[in-house]
Amino acid sequence: MAARYHAVMSTNSPSSARLLVQCADRPGIVAAVSQFLFQHGANIMQADQYSTAGGADRFFMRVEFQTAALDCSMDALNEAFRAEIAPRFDMDWRLAAVHRPRVAVLASRTDHCLLELLWRWRGGELPIDIPAVISNHEALRKDVEVFGIPFHVFPVTAATRPQQEEAIRALLREQRIELVVLARYMQILSREFIAEYPARIINIHHSFLPAFAGADPYGRAFERGVKIIGATAHYATEDLDEGPIVEQDVVRVSHGDTRESLMRLGREVERSVLARAVQWHIEDRVFVHGNRTVVFH
Image (cartoon, rainbow, N blue to C red):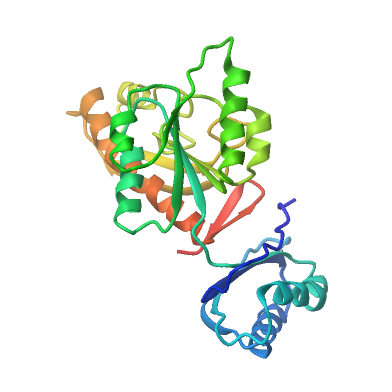
């Protein structure tokens, strides 16, 4: 059963908004949504839709529209959609103003995925706010503080893991974090942590899943003599490295590559895969249905 979207109320007057819909496929959905937005003065800038096949057809739709000419507030638009359109099609939906989401990045000692996100954020490519970078080691402090972002360290041992994780969760709540990014954070999150951010924790795994899940994927890939290696960005779930996949990519390797060269090549793929997954998530391009995703590029 897909998680039900909830309406998000807006307190400002943005220039654009997005409507996300998923429901059982049937005729008339696109017409109903388009007509509703037109009647309220919305100017549709982009619309994507997709329907699955195979007996249990599911419909997915993403609409981005300008709000300058709306005949009502965003709150009123939400209420009207809830009353007039959503019940007709039993929709899971979200209608929200476009805004800069608050994102926390968690990393351990490895810097390449973290720095890729920070470079893109500083260059304006990622329209997000990053109020905190969190680690279980001090190793990345200087790298992060150069960007003017607060760096928080919560050391962890097997005995202190519950207290350490609760301290991190308290910080995330305090900072009103909307998305958590695991940029090579080498700790397993608890069921409670993951449940607090459903489909809002993106992890980067350094293999082309489902191959080589778990620890040391490059070492195991080297031992098998693979000809491609890859990286996978996915939503974290209770099942390690098995959450819905958002993005993947690969690079060719050969018999002449060493473990070290596989790791070097893999780092380049990891960086771009994670950055794209974060970009698509914050642009509301990812729909989760069961353990799969629909991604409108």
